[in-house]
Length: 486
Image 1 (tube, helix red, strand yellow):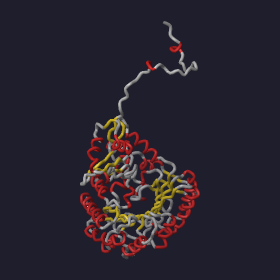
Image 2: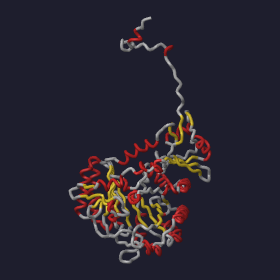
Image 3: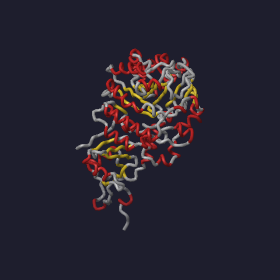
Image 4: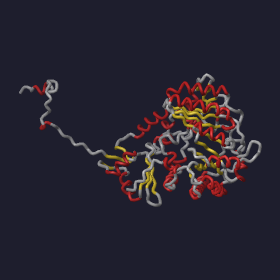
């Protein structure tokens, strides 16, 4: 039997739109998609039975009521679940806690990492307004060999920003030192210029300052807030008896009461700002830090703009390292938990557990980003504020007065290379999207060793701490949390 025309020429090619007879349509079985737990999940169960999930890739953080716990755990087993997942399963999939079977999550992370690491529409600068300081803190590692940022360096910054402005979506300025307010001339010069440039080119301008607050007068605070500098880190190391021994004026004078007066003045404002009140603790001052928090809670308690930040004193390379009475690793954890508990008791806001470090790349050190540079008083470009000029690899280039940037490629590569790719432990870690293998690139540069982020070492405590935060805290609005109580 000779072949029919249908076997030789498609009906569509002959201008006929006749479908194939139903009897010839072939059906095949399509298996239902299965979903399994993401490799980037972390979870804990609170004393009240609530379960907290965190996905370090999507940044999702969700607290579920106790009645959902068993259903959630069943969905997150290695065998996973087949579609239809139901309302709860669909929610877990949407937030990234469940992924389709066979998903290569490491490759997904690599894609997001490259987008984040090599973007061209962001510039971040840590500006040393002054490399000198009006304090001589006992644990400080800086040498204070230069003063206010030179006019030619400031001119170079202006020209660089202006040249890059058309391509920018965001410019970040972080004032540092020394003591940045010791270099007020530089701030007063650059702030209005940056603000006008942002308006002219419609990019966002983010600003912050690490200051001892001794010179944060009412007049200067007003000007800084008007310029949009509304995020501050200010250190107070306890009651006057402890603080004034550790954070002493360069002339030997006490500093506690001036700082507290300036902080109280800030608290009286209606402005929108945040102040991280950093407390550096060691064996000498931590026994009285509870009393200190009771004292300052009278001024800053229940004001979410003021947030406690506790850090252990370290031997950071200063001339007094040998005499510092630092806490051991185990002691640090115990002291930290005690301080966090006390802050809650007296109504002081504080860092919100994993809420502040939940998103992709949030635990990456600024020095690991190619678009982040420290600018010294003379235009030297650096990466890490801990070593500044003390390590050759840290000085990565020079900013010239005409706005051109001369970078040393080999030095830059030490800091911005994707170290996780050559570290099998990093590639298998569930916190990889957060720290990306460079929580501390300085450790990588100095010894080719990884430095795991603190959130991983204290994960259970940090997640429990997040669960236990008072729900009325305005700071917790940062937490991408759905209290699934239905």
